[in-house]
Image (cartoon, rainbow over all chains, first blue to last red):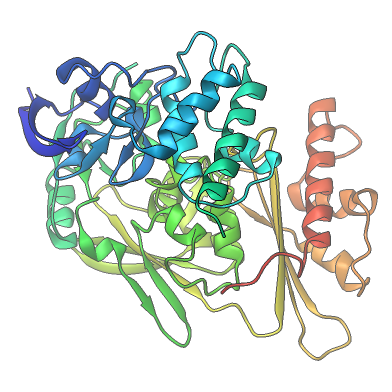
Length: 161
Length: 290
């Protein structure tokens, strides 16, 4: 029987040591061991995007990342998303009705946050393409894309020319 | 679903990885980004007893640039190609191809070596690397060997790699001066695997007709060089062939018999003809390397 592994990492800014069986994915580590159930598991094959989290500042699929590979990594989940970009994004999601059942929302927010902070003006089609890896089974895409479009524009304007 | 149990190994060097692979060769898989292997393991289509995780091996992230071309470490991610964090010796083609792979979250972890080891001809790297004449570097306890990508890819999920061999790098020759390229990927949704994928290179040789090479992915178990299509293009220096003109030579290249083909196969042939046509139209139009 394979042994359990122990790794040290930072999760949402806090130093964490975790022990788990090797087959544990980052998503299961976050949800089952650390109680961070904001990261949702949909397809567990990388297609739906609900489990997207930041690892070392880059969005990745937590279902396709082994927890064991996260030694020394900095993980940020939806629970710890903060700052003006995210506040604007949350407000626009709310205003534009960008969530219905909310299952896909954690992954949507992480992916959208990654878009907003790049400060690149984006056409609606470009946002649609960038969000193509996050599936909303309520099919509320129009609201989601509208909300991101508004936040991207507003955050670029807020910083002025 | 969740992966089955396995023992996890995390070597710090290529030599260490090769030793582990040799010792565990009966039931071991190499994992880097895991973007192809983990879905298979989550679905229990793969249940290796041992995983050798090479994501902590710094050598596998190196790039060596020479006058002839570049040698990219096997764990270079799609994202690094996409954003040209590594030099693009194919005048923007590597970056363009990487952009189409999966989604950003996938590209941040998935690696070029992993994609080639997975050998799915509807993925970008097998076709693009075949078209560019790239070479795979493989390491085992017996030493290093170099395998042209076209000899490396043997079929669906099947490569020339031995059970205890590790891909360490991929060498890509510099695209020849005066070469223009065009690529087109046909997929139902951004980020999906291709239904068809064509890469065209047109090299001005000073002769009356330029040298044209055409590669097609997602048609067979390995990428195909379309020799009949190239011949048809040689007779038309302006490359003004329509999908209808291409489907004859294309059928010959794929080995399809248009007279007896099923509706499904005829549809596939049409898709490939349109894809090759669009790749031809795209020649010289995409942004170049920085």
